[in-house]
Image 1 (cartoon, rainbow, N blue to C red):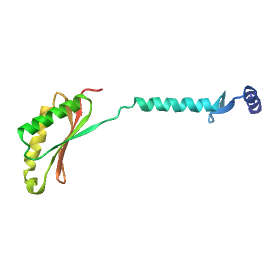
Image 2: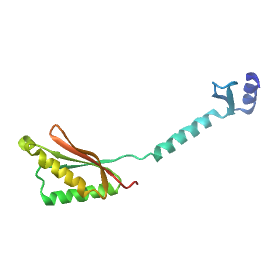
Image 3: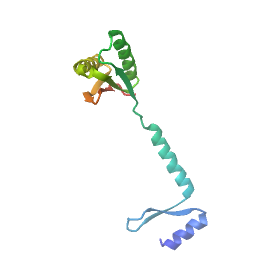
Length: 143
């Protein structure tokens, strides 16, 4: 079919002639309502975006000498976060000279990871960045 014939057909039907595959030999064209086509494409994009899962990262802060009760309280929160499908970023914040106790902070974070072994898995081992030592734990259970 010639281009002019296709344009005449599209005009007769009150629709648009849209080139689908310009690199093909011969080029592929389709007679459609262009505004409806754009609307459907936008709708598909919106559906895909709605299906995406968003990763939530919850932070839990410890001191190098966190008490047992505080530790257990924060552990329960972390378990809840992991069961909800979020990631947990636990960190020990060292103030002033407390950086001398970085071994205690590392032990605390490793113990924290061990206590959360059933709910999540360690994504990144304890790492000291400035005055913070962080560990990432991701959920085993998918939403």
